Image (spheres, rainbow, N blue to C red):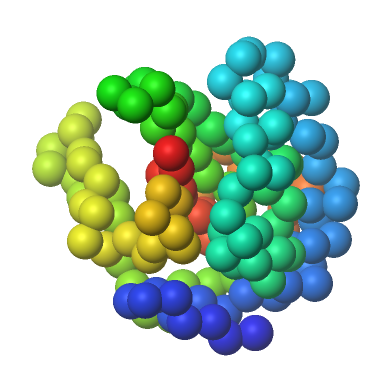
Length: 146
């Protein structure tokens, strides 16, 4: 199924993605750190627009492959980053990660797609920590969330 999100156009096999997520463990079953356990609980509290996006692609937010805390914000909230995978291909758009050298890169906020004021995503073809249950072709969805 073809989707367009801002500058991104993707072709996602929603049913295949959904079936794969049904086989994956919860974030807290892979990692018992406080950050992962907190993200799993906070997933229920995310705005409707975030849930609508991930549900439409067949992704269970409580089963993403990676999440991490970037920093604590001045208002006491936490800035999370992370990523998950989806069965599909990138038709148009660029990763938000810009390499400036072999060891350094930055997240270009101009290329992200905002699902909500406190949640943005980007797609990239380069995938990391791919779960063995997934079959190619794959895309990685990167996110930043407060």
